[in-house]
Image (tube, rainbow, N blue to C red; front, side, top):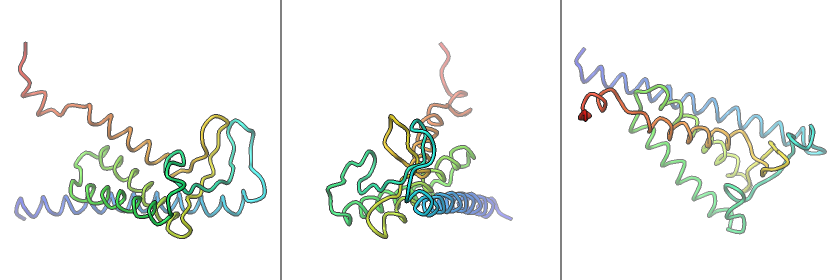
Length: 166
């Protein structure tokens, strides 16, 4: 097997793993949203500090854009999700941590897009007394983004070897 073929098959495996991970996480979030719509329709569950409470968000983060037509929010969300997907596919990170972070971000973006596409709103169900209600997909996006930032601060072995001393 040539080096090129090995590189291509390695990238294909990384892409497949990233896509499968993102799909599984998105499916988990969508299943929880379906559960929340049924189980939380009548009343929230839990104490005020950390509660499962059904809410619907027509906007994006912190309800920004909630007065825009839903097709604009869906289109904007779709463009961002496609951009993340293309970036993840093209880069197919060799670092398992970077691939996992991208998969988590893509999962959150895709799940919120699928949820929003039907009726123009995202189902939220995680509520604290001091923060807007959110969902697992939002947690995925934030944690994946924070992980990507943290990973960007790490220098590679190659960068360390080529850094002048003194």
